Image (cartoon, rainbow, N blue to C red; front, side):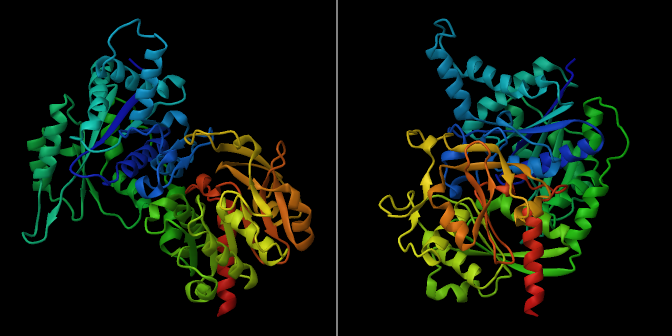
Length: 539
């Protein structure tokens, strides 16, 4: 018998059903019962990680403390559980194959023919167990990306089949998430897609223990009975997952459906006291009953796909609830912004956030947004490239360096106020080579940053190659843009703020990656408060 139990979450019928949210919600319920839980995501694509993927392809790239570039679902895991994830929590087909092929090149297989079975499946199984063998967790939940029936998912499913056989019936459990669509013309919910999906999964040698059925309408008892009968599961293992007002409702909906109780029974785990979800309920109460409302302009270049800024939008939800304030985000394409149209696009804003990103496209629009916020005393927050845009704008319009820029965008600029980090200048490989993960930052006492955090030393997560050029620091500070967060080892400027502005902060790091339901990020909390105060001042 293993000390750690393993739960696998698979999906069928269609993608984007919310496997990550269901996995995170179950983990939250089990954690609230006193179990130590973690979640990992296995992605079937061949990229080694999502670090080189365009955000339009895969949404945001989520960065962990240990510097892993991972799937955005890991953000949900952390936001729900308030526990950090790591490199071990996200594994791709590319990483599995890369490891096996590297071993083959090193002669580790002693001349044997390297095959998907057993070599690839063995490496997948090794990764399944990594977190369990750490001794930290009672339960490891593994989300298998993609859909049952996809060719690229087959090695993962075969590995899960083998793993279940090796571990025994009470050590593992499979939850299969499917869709029960509603046909408007027939005014009926249809179970056939779920039946086919379970049949496909069964053909791989895996039969689900629990079915979670996504639906727009409640599942009547006779429909649950039909699904149970034709999918060969217990009727109380057919779980309704109805569309929710917010993803943060899902743990309570899953509790109502007794998903956690079914899991504990099947894994022969003690049914400890009722889950303690008081903090969660307080958060939901504030989220759904705001006392005020603000409009935030989020200026970015990937705004057509909000998932590209998923952690930022979720951090606003956490900070809004903390302030009992509804945060309405308006997505503004930086490519549309020109100096003469800024008022038209941003005049409504109670706060302006300039988002992170890479490359020259949309840069001038972001700089125009910064200038508008600075000159009109509108609360401003710039993240990563957003901070760098604030630095460039200040150089051009306050210091008088009209061609000031970043060497990422203009290698010929005579005022490279943002420059490539020394450690990055000889890097040629793109994947996993940026300054990644958590680094320390010391805050200047008496600064806004110090007041926001309430302490002098912080750790924040990074993902960048370019930095503030310290050759210009004295000119900036003389004119009122202060470096109030500094890396103690490299002297890298991590935070800038304006001396004579109600709220104007830029961070080189990504604070959104550490915001959770139970611990909203302090910069977002204070930014929302500043925007709320600004909105009240306009009335």
